[in-house]
Image 1 (tube, rainbow, N blue to C red):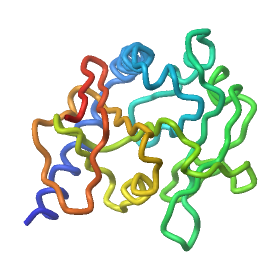
Image 2 (image 1 turned 135 degrees about the horizontal axis):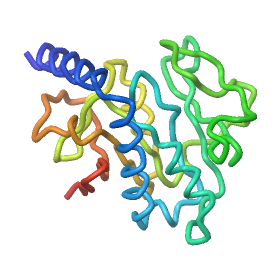
Image 3 (image 1 turned 90 degrees about the vertical axis):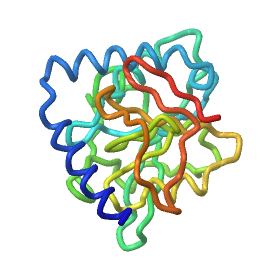
Image 4 (image 1 turned 180 degrees about the horizontal axis):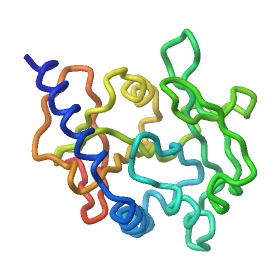
Length: 203
């Protein structure tokens, strides 16, 4: 059964991720930043949806700070998701450049669904159709740019509402990039998957 296979893979991937050392995580974040900064779609994006790393997810904050600081990049806004209580969906809220250049300094996130840090509902909401690039975390990705998340489907539903010409980029540790994942009909493909040492583009 696909659901059982996904559950077992998710469990093993999370266990493996939990075993990464702090040094390995820091190195992976630096190498991932280099990969992301080389992507034309990110350099050209004015509005990017990102995330605050949770539970050992690969850290994209160094990459976001570098994008803001680079004169070669068009980035103007970064938005972060929050779970809308009782509505089973994500909303996107505007964050300032200070968040990334000072690594969370000066802005206060709140603990939301599942203990994940997310922007307060009072921060300005940005419509999905204004987002150029969506950076998507996950438990595992595969070489066909498919994703396994935490099983609640928040990102799958959000990606179903994105603008057709936007770009969805999954980010992951090299060790959690699989050849093929067990999938269900509702699982949504990324346009690209980026790890510290690979850039995969969905054909």
